[in-house]
Amino acid sequence: MKQGKLLYAGKAKSVYRTDTKGTLIVEFRDDITAFDGGKKDTLKNKGSYNAGVSAFFFEYLEKHGVKTHYLQMLDKNRMAVRTLSMIPLEVIVRNVAAGSIVRNYPFREGIKLSPPVIVIDFKDDSRHDPMLNDDLIIALKLATPAELRKIKKISLEINRLLSSLLARQGILLVDFKIEFGRQGKTIRLGDEISMDSMRLWDKKTKESLDKDVYRFNKGDVMATYNRVARRIMTGGAARPAATKKNTVAAQRKVPGSPGRAAKPKAKKR
Ligand code: 5GP
Image (cartoon, rainbow, N blue to C red; front, side, top):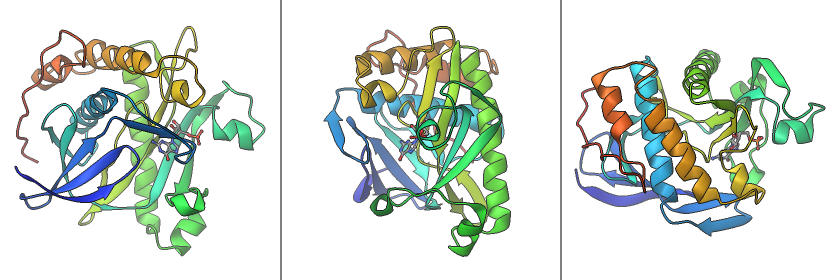
């Protein structure tokens, strides 16, 4: 597959056309930003950690029946994905109160939210991603009522799957943000699931293992990303489903680790 013209460049990823119909390439760059782009840096290897972890999660979710845009890794920073018509919603699932929900509402940080709380923001940088409700989503024609029900159902299923996968690694999935797109009538998970888009805490110590380390200068963000990527991808792979594919995913090379790189494998979907 040949990489074509740049279609879109976001804050940390670039999307390219390809010569294959219905397929795009997402490049995870080494850029990291926070606070609406107010804080910016370029950190060596950061893109490959996020690409590797995203691919690992996408493969895991697909194996458990969640439809995603993921096709295959091309190299350590680039992923082939299905073309989706993206829905401009940021779906945030929260299991524990942290971040903006603590700033904006009278929740004490660290309290369990059970059942999980879904918050949906309008993906619009110029408006600073304002929070939506169901009526606004329908009135703005961002999704139909049936699509919205489906999006919420898939989001909770993703939360269930990822929470239990991470729990086995001693990691608490505090919250995460996901985005969806349409492929015809099918709703698929798009974008990424990585340390940039999740809040992960060590279960015992409550230490941050995600972008909060960068946001709030809590330490060496790259050392954290390296450690958490290894912890997620090498420890967690074989246990959820000890299949051949999962073993391959488990062996994908974590940058800086002695693991083997997984061969890009064409997938029939
Ligand atoms: P909060 O609303 O507390 O700032 O974020 C909740 C969760 O969603 C966190 O895990 C955060 O990383 C993620 N999140 C919220 N907005 C964005 C965004 O614009 N980009 C990314 N990558 N993640 C986001």
